[in-house]
Image (cartoon, rainbow, N blue to C red; front, side, top):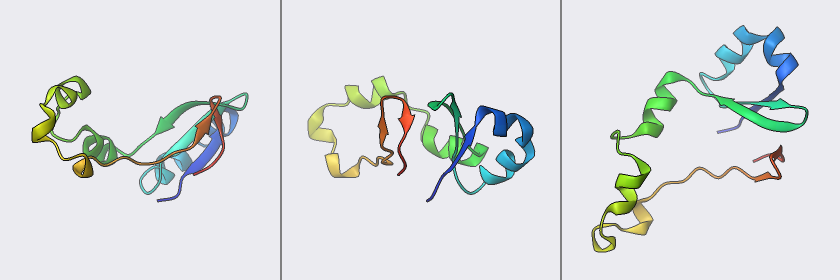
Length: 86
């Protein structure tokens, strides 16, 4: 999955494009070079929510019940709140 990066000015001028783009890729919005927000499709948002379990609930599960290999993470490299690409 690739991603789209827009400045806040670009986002303000092209909201419709950002909405279309987020259907297939996350849209990262920067403000003065710093990552400020991410626009996701509603289906991707629901997928990320999973079963509705909070991170605190997930971490509270005894370790013998959890196989670390079953935990999925998407990798995004962010250094000093500046987008460096993925």
